[in-house]
Length: 208
Ligand SMILES: C[S@@+](CC[C@H](N)C(=O)[O-])C[C@H]1O[C@@H](n2cnc3c(N)ncnc32)[C@H](O)[C@@H]1O
Image (cartoon, rainbow, N blue to C red; front, top):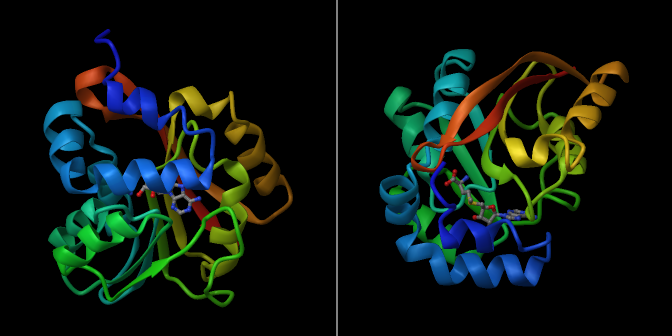
């Protein structure tokens, strides 16, 4: 296995600290796309778009949770240009880059560990790539996504393998299903950082 890229070592050591997260991503925002896709071989945006696009129709309203620079929305729009995609992220520098893609209907600053600024049952689909990972957002963040998804809406997210059990995603997702809050459509092992031999759990959930 290749040694992990120093940027990723920093990223997964942020400890969920909002100030550290925004400082780190503000500094990285302009070089993020190149470093992630060319150097690290990140494919989280591709695998999530591939999973979500066939599950939503025409002009569906989609939330990209932790949208970063907009890689996911660009992939989704390539598959269905009619989608209406909103993005939310903690880091203004990343949102500024996302705005340049022209792929979003609106971009909103916000924290996925807090109450989200959207009413219940807002979205036809939700996607989140690269956010449920060590040092970022824990499994508790999933409840808010479920609240703002319409009943039956797909919620597609990546969970980095190293966070899956260590941060309790396996138990939390099972508990949400047992409580009747979600249905698990599919959880499969997927490439994540292809040049680093790092994988993720690609989860397709459904709000109940
Ligand atoms: C690895 S990037 C992934 C960005 C994008 N989804 C992608 O696939 O390229 C992680 C993103 O999560 C955001 N983030 C981290 N913690 C967050 C939180 N609590 N609320 C909202 N966004 C958060 C960061 O600002 C950063 O843009």
